[in-house]
Amino acid sequence: MTQEPNSLSCQEFQAQLPELIGSSENLAMNPHIQHCARCSSLLSDLKTIAEAARELLPIMEPPETVWKHIESVIRDEQGSRESEGRQE
Amino acid sequence: MPQVVPAESAALPRSSESEVIALVQAGDHLAFAQLYSLHKRRIYSLCLRMVGNVAEAEDLTQESFLLLHRKISTFRGDSAFSTWLHRLAINVVLMHLRKKGLPLISMDEAMEPAPEGNPGRGFGASDPALSGSIDRMALERAVTDLPAGYRLVFVLHDVEGYEHHEIATMLNCSLGNSKSQLHKARLKLRDALRTYPRQEARP
Image (cartoon, rainbow over all chains, first blue to last red; front, side, top):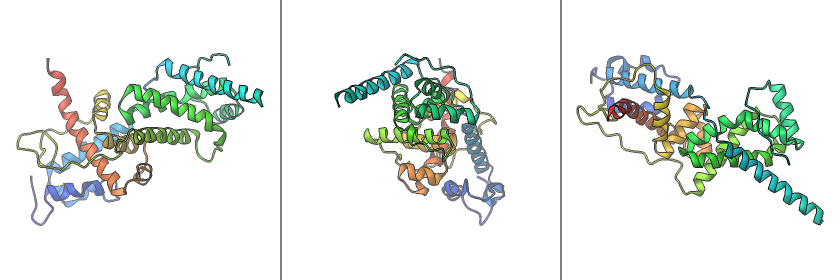
């Protein structure tokens, strides 16, 4: 840890991170970040993870059975509605 | 009702999607198959990432589309259809998790300093940073391995793009809770992503 006098410790700085990230503060200008390579690296990693998450595409394909089950339930529901209608 | 095979999904222009929705609202089953085909990947991927389990994700996808079929007459177009459907599916997943008695928020784990030389999480982690790009499959696996509450907040915020105030409402938790869970999820993912290559290298 490289720490300037009067600046936050890594522990203090990281305790504030959940609030600081996503706030309007430019964290690159934060005095602790400017002097602490480790926290700067942590911040960069967290940013990389958030960016990678945004690029996760909805590419997983449900199996055919999902649609077949949906169709079968809809068919059953329509069947019972029709038979109820006939009874009335 | 004849069996219908949903056509391969392809993005429709907004006006065409409105027409398909109107047809579904009028009871057209072919149009519903088309709507399913258009949105099945997004909804299944959402469910799978939220619960981290294939069988449950399949059930929840089914439930979401069945609920859509029952409720589509209430869609008035005040928001984009995909946004509306997404919220419907998220509610289905959250209701399922609540029924199972699972806490939607993970217990916060203490952030202890990692021992010297240990690449684990915490204040002391001074091991190599992640490279500029992250392998998608490794990230998917790491998300699946997250504790349930961390996973929910991470998927909703970082993958799906919801704001903390929306997540706090969905999960019935405080804003600070949502931010803290997201931060801890990202810390856990960071640890996991640095560990995976070493795990995979094992015989």
